[in-house]
Image (cartoon, rainbow, N blue to C red; front, top):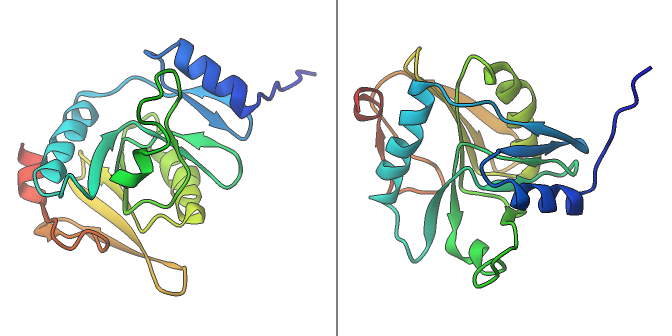
Length: 186
């Protein structure tokens, strides 16, 4: 019988800071490394980040790639991209050596589909982001050229919608529009 070793968040944070080139997630107390990126995923993250940054008010929001988020079950996940209020950075500014882990709900969380993580992202990560109360969660599928959005409703449930063309405006970011043609052909 193999015993599963669980680690604390404190141990996780020390390891993540000691090995900055590795993308460690803490999933239910277990350390798991995110796999490397495919070409499509690796190009969509900075392109979508650029499209968001060019429309966000930097005094109010920041687009961040691969920042860590704390989940209700104690897991710490690394979405591909998030939009966070600038105030969420206050506890981390001027504190080198402190791992930034966002606990509060986010206006937008994005995962880019890949063959190695796609099923896990939908089955495990999307529900965790929903439990966190994130306003909107996107799964961008570069091969199918779709964007699936889960939007938090006033009653706390999420409405799911798939986009194949046109523009998508995140509910919590009404001045932001993402043109899917520009995203998938960029």
